[in-house]
Amino acid sequence: MRPAALHRLDWLARSASPVAISLLLVILGMVPLQIPDVTPVIPAWALIAVYYWSVHRPDLMPIWAVFIIGLVQDLLGGGYPGVGILALLLVHQFVASQRRTFARASFQLLWLIFALIAAAAVALMWLLNCLLQQQLLEVDPALFQYLTTLAVYPCLAWLFAQAQRSFLS
Amino acid sequence: MNRRAGSVARLATPVKAWGQRFALLLLISAAVGLMVLGKADVALVERARTTLADGVAPILEVASQPVVAFNGMVEHAHQLLALTAENKILREQNRRLEHWQMVARRLEAENKALRKVLNVTAEPAVAYATARVIGDQGGAFVRSVLVNAGQTDGVLRGQAALTSEGLAGRVAESGQRTARVLLITDMNSRIPVFVGESRERAVLAGDNTAQPHLVYLGRQAQLAPGERVVTSGHGGVFPPGLPIGTVASLADGTVRVQPFVDWSTMEYLRLANYELPGVLSDFHEGAEQARGAR
Image (cartoon, rainbow over the protein chains, first blue to last red):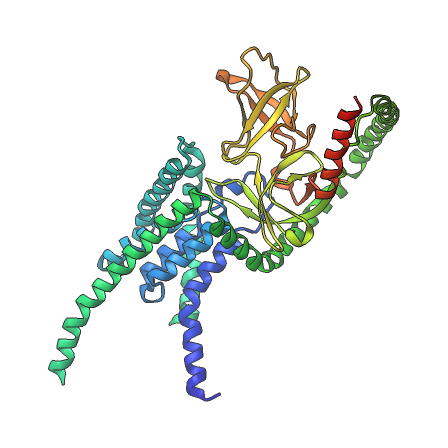
């Protein structure tokens, strides 16, 4: 292979890493941990991944990739397909519309904004599930999942930042 | 040159923005369409699910190995620490079980003799497939797990999924190598049951909490905490008598059931095929004959 082709392949692999990492996270998030009571509150990995990469490398997290991540998450998750996709698409769109604010934001501010966006996303998913199920669902599981998602955000953001530094700078 | 590039950019920016907006609308419509399809329970969605699960299964199998190994180690250490105490308990239990075995043998013989007298046809044989739980579909809205056995192992939709403790759920979808088991705690799970000694009929309905509740319970039903809940076999999905759990609480008219299955240690599931086609037709024929003979 010519060096130019190799170079291009390398570039492609690096550019695909945010989407690949997000997909891998969605799949690995399903590994049974066999820790009591942890399953219902497992964080919404895709939400964190899509938010982080939409903020930091929007060019490498296109909207169709967000759709695919949501699709994989919903199909594997066993719930109603489309619910998670819709939430992720709206998160992505919101971040894209406020790009200037995000470009200058500190980590703390990003976390705070994530708290608000994730709350809206979880609320939307809860509402859609209620509609599709045609009954009022308990709020607690969604609330606890929201809290764990919020709590793991800094760790995951740090890991993503390491990946960004090593693959994409 | 510069001016031309500028005009291209001026033209390209709105086109790009329009394209992005179009893509967003298209994908949002697709998501909504998927919701409708999913609600309508279309075969296409099920196929997509099982195909994806089959594809992801190898990754999950590999990824769950360290967890299994780690848990094994922790358990081993625990066992070493509690060896003496456990031995004592097991000896005690063994003595009790030996007694029960004796009782069971006697009852089995008696049962067999009585069946012979009454000309009752034999229960259908059961084929088991044992599968490892490779995916735990966590989250706030679904209670289901992915197991590494599918149609090639004879696992089909509707089969009962059991642990050694009791009923865990039923197979909701089965792919080639994987199957999704809807747990009895999921809000879509409805299982006809008998409750207690009086064998009150009811339906066990999951609601995504750890303790599913009973619906369609007779108004005169007198229940107490601790009474056993078993499958009734109505509806023909499960055979009667599979243990599910015990009545946990009776607060505000809602009867909640504590399942026997310990969800956190659920590593393997037995998928029981009670509806072997050959056996089932034999069973029906047998039943017809018995009816004819009467």
